[in-house]
Image (cartoon, rainbow, N blue to C red):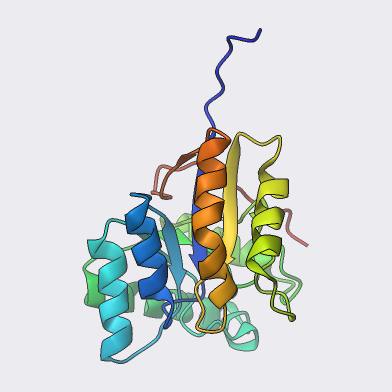
Length: 211
Ligand code: ZN
């Protein structure tokens, strides 16, 4: 049926920030009037605190991505995991006023850095959080820095055939090409008919298969 209209939704997610590129990412999102989701770590100091506040004040979702992002520490034990989760939750609440219950595991829930992921998932879900993996990766965390064109190609190849995409990107001082790719990614998503939305607590998650 050629008249059938499918709703296409894309969620842009930026992990590991804030960073010296947060402001650049926010400026681009503002230019396109697009709201995204920032899965942040615990970074201290006035400049970082201002970046968390800017994320919230400019209308984006702030999600939790562990305080330390240190795999050995976060996933050391249930006690360690729960303490880290509470630490980032209370820190972000103190800085921004937002009591975020949106979570992304360091490495995603499919990470092989722990054999106890099912227990951590149970902790997250039984404490009122929801966790969000991704079904499209920009590849921008590759050891060799990708060009903006390569990042854009990864995203657009990944979204092809999917009406609902959660796209993984990174907010990092060393990921300038992600920032350079962002406008063309947004324009390509619009051209392909996607609406771009922030993840909120009612957003249906994408979950990886636990290893
Ligand atoms: Zn990360």
